[in-house]
Image (cartoon, rainbow, N blue to C red; front, top):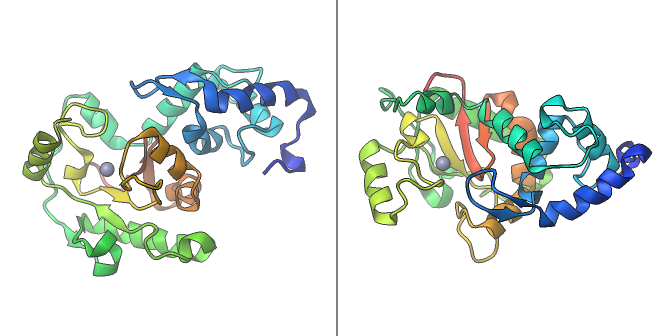
Length: 252
Ligand SMILES: [Zn+2]
């Protein structure tokens, strides 16, 4: 992707620093130490408004011109990644609701996804508006991305609405009720959140929060398409989980 557009001579040195930190930076933006920020490169590119790859001068130039990042030299820092995370989280209405200590009631109306929409034939329910928006988004994705169109599994839903009771049983069973990956008040109780198949690393499940899996997903066409385009259909993502998307067309 380092085309002419992404060559900004003044930022060549910053690009070299970013190429190295991309795989080496020690960061803990989501409360868990991890190495390198490549997993978050697609969301960072979107926030700073560039299509350039993260190791290019063009990316560094865009970062330099993004005031929230506080990185006028174009060199990525943990603070700049934190600013990206804040910008992404701000698009998820559920975050503000949970921050107020409120856990939303389950919706009064749910619609059934069609069999081909559930991953592996799974039965999935969502709020009607969320399901309609999802269908419009998938149709566009298949029309616009040959890689997504080539495999019917891409963008299938493997988890939609989850009742508070089933979520409580699940977190009890998995023993991580308070972890990053499964909150006690899951957004899935709203009927607006869905886990979408964006691919997976060899040997991992499609919703494994293991770093190698999330890194592999961040390189995949389905995820990259979503990062750039899901907002057109009212969807907001969660940067830590490439598979988790929420429809923002109705209040949680
Ligand atoms: Zn989810």
